[in-house]
Amino acid sequence: MASAVEMIDITKVFPGVVANDKVNLRVEKGEIHALLGENGAGKSTLMSILFGLYPLDGGKILINGKEADIKDPNDAAALGVGMVHQHFKLVQNFTVTENIILGMEGRDRFGNLDVRAAEKRVAELTERYGLAVNPKDTIENITVGMQQRVEILKILYRNADILIFDEPTASLRPQEIDELMDIFKKLRDEGKTILFITHKLKEIKACASVCTVLRRGKSVATVQVADMSEEALAELMVGHAVQFTVDKKPAQIGKTVLKIENLNVANSNSTHKKALPAVQNLNLEIHAGEIVGIAGVDGNGQRELAEAIAGLVPVQSGAIYLDGQDISGNSIRQRIEKGLGWVPEDRHKHGLILPFRLDENFILKSFRKDPYSGKLGFLNFPIIAEHADKLIKDFDIRAGKGPATISAGMSGGNQQKAVIAREIDLSPDLLIVCQPTRGLDVGAIEYIHKRIVAERDKGRAVLLISFELDEIMSLCDRIAAISRGSIVGEVDAASANEREIGAMMGGVKA
Ligand SMILES: Nc1ncnc2c1ncn2[C@@H]1O[C@H](COP(=O)(O)OP(=O)(O)OP(=O)(O)O)[C@@H](O)[C@H]1O
Ligand SMILES: [Mg+2]
Image (cartoon, rainbow, N blue to C red; front, side, top):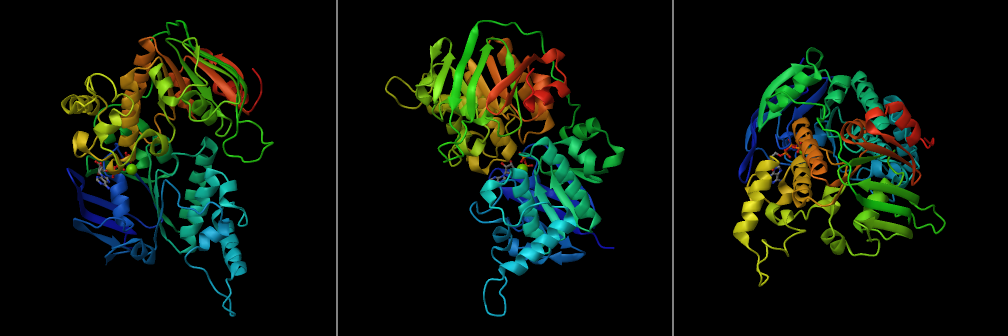
């Protein structure tokens, strides 16, 4: 039987970088195939080529044994190839069904839009593939996990047999990840072929049968997942052994750096006047030399908490003290000057100015200062370039044109590393890091964790907000659980267990 996908000697060149260098990939029908590789290895590029988003510079593609000329996503769709992107492309105020049929609306015999027939077909697909969604729900009212199902239904509705996913679990909750893995298996059992990119080795072990590894633009191995441990997969990917645990000395706790008193922050997602505040009477204290983690299920106020400290959203009442001064009325710039650093959850929206060069993004918060600006206010370009070179080297940021690379053209993980590099480099008194390792490869995670611990050991206060309990448990000194906008309990990380934290996240007071 012919393979579902064969990509032979695929080459793709971007300015300054060979993103795919004679890559070979073979995916059999009905297989779940994982694509693994360091940040910038060329995974998204390879999948974008298969889906017709980028033209090839060399090589050829066979779909079901036949050579295919895929010039755009319509060609890909006609060949049964569908892709679910990391950032969904749904119309927020349309219903599930409307989104699914958008662009291929059927008409009844009177020429009217046949919503009924479409709904019936959507219901059939939902049932068959175990994709529970309500076809009448509006997108803006459903969870991220549900929206992803709509994206999957959208490509199934167009009869896709080969389904591509680029980091599908990056913004899902743990339970949604398990559900997605089950959906993958169900799709496979129904004869679909699945290709997915992930940095999480656990997911590969949980559901893929075959894994292809890319390194610096080249395909270095295709392995049977059953034969490989997580450690072996990691080593294959980065070329050396990776340490999965965080080494740290006992914390040397110093003075109070952050003190939050009875904080209330409005719910930014709701225009309803009587909606409950996102943050409610929240109290929290963080000292110099410690990492405090906020554990919680997405949507319990952790985002608004971080944004209120950073100055993005106003506080309704309460106080935020940074080094003893109430900053709750300060501008963002004043807060930065008083020693606040922030790695936002959304690197595109709040982390980087995408059309700017990498070196410009590195000095967004410090360009007014010495040594980047001289006394007369002119930028000192040689020093800015030197600074960028250093961060690129220290954080191993892969950017084709070095400091001059436009940030929009960098891979997701490398954009993430750039934001973290900028914030850590400033070494602020209080460093807030939200989902810091989202989209990073295991090698990069190891390095970033080390650097966060180094900040703590320098006597900085670190606030970590993460949906990954593993990350919170291994990195933090103290863990506070948030539920419905309030801290429901705090535990010492050394003696914490997952069950206890899980119960607190569910609102059970410690
Ligand atoms: N549109 C683009 N313009 C310029 N360079 C690009 C573009 N897209 C990708 N690149 C470059 O190609 C290389 C591979 O990027 P790609 O996005 O495929 O990596 P990736 O393996 O998906 O990484 P990540 O795990 O970080 O998402 C990177 O060096 C990146 O900077
Ligand atoms: Mg990518």
